[in-house]
Image (cartoon, rainbow, N blue to C red; front, top):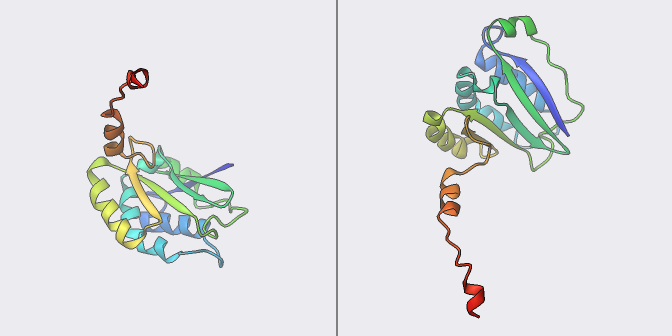
Length: 154
């Protein structure tokens, strides 16, 4: 099941406050590796500031459901207000939770490196690509040639 939450960001909240609201939403006393969320703060705040998560969500997979979080900016953020509907489960309680955050292609390298070192459960992806897409792997698959006549030779 997919659950959606919209969270007001700039100017209703700073990017740090926006990330804090997301962390509060997705954690509880039984959260696993919650310290990674704090360790990722500067990277994720930078991504939130670029406003990519207004159109491509931050996605958290954990437990039975998938949570998509969109940030809301500008006048819409002011109209939305600071309230955030709570979740009925803790998506970070599972040892298998992961998160992906959209970012610009220019920031992908440094953000990926920083998160790999600080918070390996959290990854970034190019805002123009699907999460988990590896352009290099896609090129390798495209370069594969199959000799369909090989079966006829045996």
